[in-house]
Image 1 (cartoon, rainbow, N blue to C red):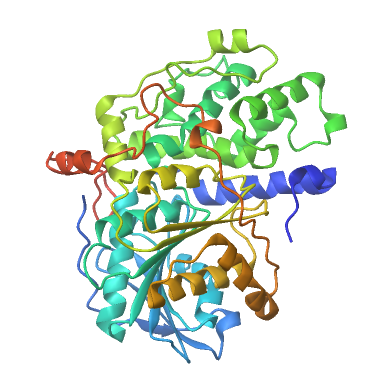
Image 2: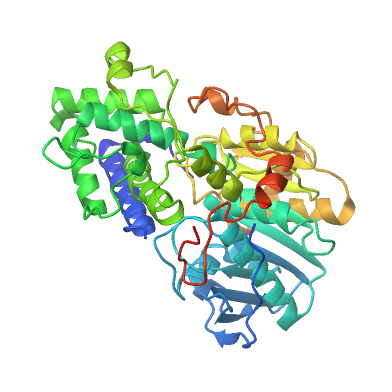
Length: 484
């Protein structure tokens, strides 16, 4: 179904670069302890279902009291269970179409008989606890209008994996709220460590390319991503990446310096060439959002003590690359908002492609170390995509979680791999499980920061202590304004 970038012809590899860059542009644009708010008193309005669900389900949309849009689907043959979905991103903004697109992407869950509910989140930009609160809100809204389901499952994809894992820790301990968790391609190392490879990309890129900013432009600390008032666009960032590396060109058309720059960037950061445009966009626009819109201009990132290797001249790279230390309060606030403690009492099943180019599979090692393996089953596939794994595998994963919850018998990666063939006959796409695979340590892929290698990244004691500090974390209002 999926092919590695190395096995693709050059023309298709270039298309992957363009597609990845376009996705990042669409997601990012220019980015501009929370209790869940009360659910909207207005009734969900009937709406047209995605084409694949026409005649199979009744669909509803609405907006909750905090301004988040939502979509709900109830299948004609409802099995009385609900999937509450946390979507990826974060994007610059969300509108009423966000959750209907999410439903179309995950329609297989409704086809399997589950009701489905997803929130857009109340604003764009970064905020894991905010998104978790809005995800919990849509569960409450569903129960209020359609009745309490027999079982309720959380599903988080990509950044939504971080969100769903936070929901499980924050709201999942309440009896009857949730019964199990499915995390697919999840960003599970949390915000304070999960973006360290992009910090490294930002500084290595600038050392080699010196065009973001250019020497003739106003200089700024690279941990900002971009200045608050920057007018640079996503397309301009991609143009500068092309200028430095020739990434969208045939290898034969690149200059020797461009190829050397590209080789050094990918070797040092371990970021695949095909996803480099996406990661660089996040390292500029997402960092800009986190620093300026969420942390009041404070720096949560550090690369002090990091030793960079793999370039043509590591000595010069380490001597010349920009260095900075995090503001302790900024790092604390980002950690409180997004890091995970591992205090989960629900069955958790994960699915991750071994060659995921966007959220590295080593995030699963970080999550296993955080949970210490209790109540966790992790599955891996020999695929090389992030968002579009086999539909049969998604259906199979949800069924395996449901069996685990209903019977109390914990599955194994091998038993889950064996049950996939049934779903492949229905949905196609293939089954690519590797039951014997176990990812290496997170720090074999992400360069460690001295003193910050133990898991969990935030202990339960730290979370309790920080929750007592006024204004800690990433604050938000219904309009998304910062509370700091």
